[in-house]
Amino acid sequence: MSRTGREGPGPVAGAAGPGSSRWDRVAPVLPYLFIVLPAGASLLQGWRADTFALSLFAVAWHWFMVSAHPEWTRRPVVALAYFVVLLAALGALVSIDSLFTVAGPAAFIQAFALLPRWWAYAGVAATAGVLVSMRPDPGRSAGQMLFSFLVAALIASAIGLVVQTISDQNEGRKVMIAQLQESGAKLAALAEENANLQAQLLSRAREAGVLGERQRMAREIHDTIAQGLAAIVTQVEAADEALDDVTAARARLDTVRTLARDSLKEARRSVRALRPAPLAESQLPAALQEVAAKWSEAAGVPCSVEVTGEAGPLHAEVEITLLRVAQEALANVAKHAGAGRVALTLSYMEDVVVLDVRDDGAGFVPAPPGLAPAPGSEAGGFGLLSMRQRVTRLAGDFQIESAPGEGAGISATVPAIPADTLDAVDTVNTVAEPSGDRPGSAE
Image 1 (cartoon, rainbow, N blue to C red):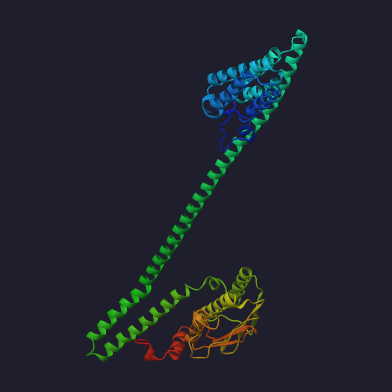
Image 2 (tube, rainbow, N blue to C red; image 1 turned 180 degrees about the vertical axis):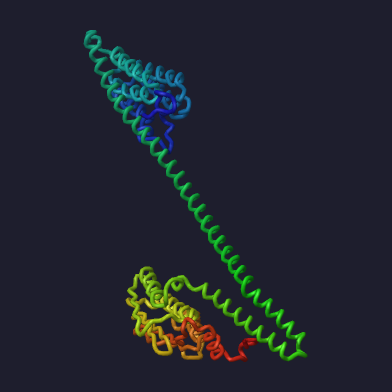
C-alpha cells in the first residue's frame, strides 16, 4: 500500500508493475474474496435475489473501477466515488445478512489503498459505522453499537497505520536503491571516462617521448655523423682535384681517414646510448640479477644467478647480446618448459664470457644443426634462432642441450671484448660474416 507522487493515495490497486510490492499485487484481489465468500455462504442458507444482485454488483463495480481501469482511481475524486458506491453496496448486503460483516475488510483495504492519507482514516470510520449501524440486530443498545464501532475503527486504523508505515519504509528503500544504482552507474561511467583519459594521456606521453627521442637522435646525428660525412665528402672532392699532387692528395686522404674514424666513434657512442634499460646504470651481472628477479616474480618460478670469475666491464655489444640471450631463454622457459627452477651462470674467463641458462622442465629434442626447426616449437622457432644469430654475429658459439623429461640448457660463448675497445666488434663481425656476404662492408 505504498503511495504514488501525491501525498496520501496509495498506488492504484491492480496497476502493479515490475517495481510494485507483493502487497500492491495482492490488494486488488482481496475484495473479491471478502465479497464472494459471505455471498456464497448466505445464498447456501437460502436463495435471495437481492443478495445475489447486490453481491454481483459489488464484484462488477470493483472489477470495472479497479481491475479493468486502474488508472481511473489515481484521481482522488474518482477513487472517493468508487469507495462510496462500494461501501453503499456492502452496507446494503450487511442489512440483508449479518454474514456480510465479513466483507468489511474489503472496504478497509480499499480505503488505505486508494484514498489520500487522512481520507483513508475517514473511510475506515465510515466503513466501521456502516457495518455497525446496518447490521440487522435490533436488540443492541446504543452503547454496544458505539463500542463495536470504536473497536472496529481502531483495529482497522491501527493495522492500516502499521501497513502504511512499512509501505512508506519500503518506498524509501526503493528510492534509495534507485539512487544508489544511479550513482553507481555514474561512478562506473566516470571510471570508464577516467580510464579512457588516462589511456589517452599515456598514449600522448609515449608519442611525445618517441618524438622527443627522434628529435634528439636527429640533432645528435646532424651535429656529429652528418657533419663528419659532409667534411669527408669535401675532403674527397679536394683530393680528387689534387690527384696530380700526390703529397696533397695523400694529405687529403689522411684527413678523410681521421674524419671517418671520428664519425665511427660518434656513431658507436650513439649506439651505446641506446643500451637496454637494465644495462643503462649497471654492468652485466647486476643487469642479469634484475632481469632474473623480475622474471621470477612474473612467472612464479625460482631463478638464481651465479657469477664466476673476475667480472669486468665489457663492450656494449657483448653485454647487450648476453642480456638479450638471457631474456629470450627465460621467455622460452616460461612459454614451454613448465619448469620448477631455473639457473643462470655467467662465467668470466680469460678471453671469453659464457652464459649458461638451465631449467628442470619438460625438455625437448633439439633440432639437428643445419635443419630448420618446427615453427613455434620449443626445439626451435624464432627464439632460439634469434639467440644463435646474436651470438654468432660476435663470432661466438651457441649450444643447446636437452632431452624429453630432463630439462634444457643453452650455452652462449662470446669473446670477452673490453669496454674500451672500439674496433673489436667490427673485427669479429668481419670474421663471422665473410666479405662476400657483406657488400660494401670494407671499412
